[in-house]
Image 1: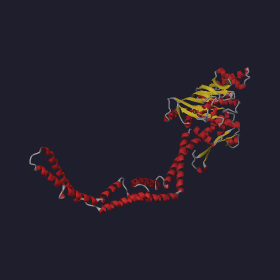
Image 2: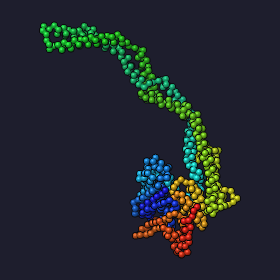
Image 3: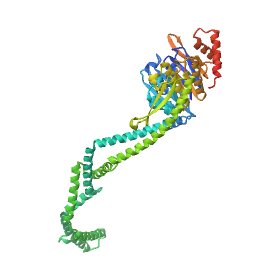
Image 4: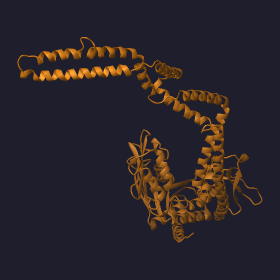
Amino acid sequence: MLLQLTVSNYAIAERIDLHFSKGMTALTGETGAGKSIVLDALGLTMGGRADAGAVRHGAKRADISASFDIARLPEARQWLEDHELDDKDDCILRRTISKDGRSKAFINGQPCPLSQLKELGSQLMDIHSQHQHQSLLQKDTHRKLLDEFSGAESLSEHTRNAWKTWNQTRQKLDLRRQNADEAEAKLQLLRYQVEELDKLALHADEQGALEQEQAQLSQADAVLHSSHHAALLCTEDDTNAAGLLRQALQQLEQLPVDVPALADTIQMLTEAQIQITEAGDNLRHFIEDYEADPARLAEVEERLSAIYQMARKHRITPEELPELHQRLSQELAELDGGEGSLEQLQAELDSQREQFNQLAQQLTEKREQAATQLDQRIAQELIQLGMPAVQFVTRLGRNNNDEPAPHGMEDIEFLVSANPGQPARPLAKVASGGELSRISLAIQVVVAQTSTTPTLVFDEVDVGIGGGTAEVVGRLLRSLGSDGQVLCVTHLPQVAAQCHQHLFVSKFTEQDATYSRIEPLDDQGRISEVARMLGGLDMTEHTIAHAREMFVKGQATHH
């Protein structure tokens, strides 16, 4: 529910601070006083289009904020939580507009995209205006109103999403069929490439191991030659290292006297002789066991050659071959009997069509049931609005060839018969301006009664209505306000007399500047305003008495 509206430097309003309560609130005033300021400002807080020309002359920016109580709106609270914008049960929508036309949007003090302001605002407030008369001539509006009345908005959205999924698959399948030859050629190439890579069967790190083995095998003769020469130098040559060490030890061991200082040196030479002898033995055993394997070398070089050739063929490095193999195999699986195959796509299309049909059938049943109820409810309101002869019909016609469509399996259109015996025809071809205004009001009132939106705004929807019908309009709006919150801009005293709260809009000039002022009226003020609406500026005692009688009767109205 709307609690407060604060407007600064917007149009001719320097500062407006309004508090709202439950029930029906009427905004009245002379033409040009600024009644539209309130509704335009509310529209901006709901993401409406901003106009730099609306910034008050001399001000840098306009600032508008609307505060709502969302304690009983679980969907709005969940939306705020999902977007991390929640602040207990309060919700403040704010909009600023600079004089250069730039605007900013805020939710609970946090900057946000305009789209979020629109999305949340639609859950908090619904504005009905006389401009909707034109949209009422469009079939899209008819479908939207029927779905709202039937409570099928969620089902309609699911149906639309199912259609999108089905249509995307259909387009994909059509494209595949159009490019069947090209796709088959690509499939054959993929099969050939994957078969080659399967045959190569290259494992990760295999190339590096093969290159290392090749290096060892190709140098086998050099290894043997060097190892044999080293063995000679250690123990087998006439002047081998072991023999020389033995001669050095003999020289020290034959010293004529014992020299303690050479004891460590003798120990070191003894150990060196032992190690040299063991090294020579190891080299001899290595030479005896080591065999050059030309056949294995040829096998390794042939394997490496195949790897290098495959890499050159695909213009990549050998290290990238395993990744290429995996990628091509996956692509082949998708095209050949996988996600992208014609058979698989057709199966998906059939399954998605069946899912769409099920949702669309449920939607059709809800619409058919609701259409009958909607026609009956609107007929009742039209009788009250002085149009008992008008027959209202909601027609559901099947799509051509039962082709799936985003909105379901049927077109929806509002038809009217203005006179008994005449067939029902589209609104645009039958209703006059005055008739359309009353039909629009009847539709809006009926749909609003089933709306979950807590705040309903009616902007001069009573244009072209007068007399007893105007009193009926007032009762309808008051009835809606009794169960929620209704704001209405009106020129009809019969409507204003029945509101729960009354706001009077006026303008004044001060120091060559024009200002708009909005003030709540007490009972006496309300009677005076109803009298002004009845008789203009020249009010007589009779006019005031009539206004008082109308006010008392309006406050006692129960519908």
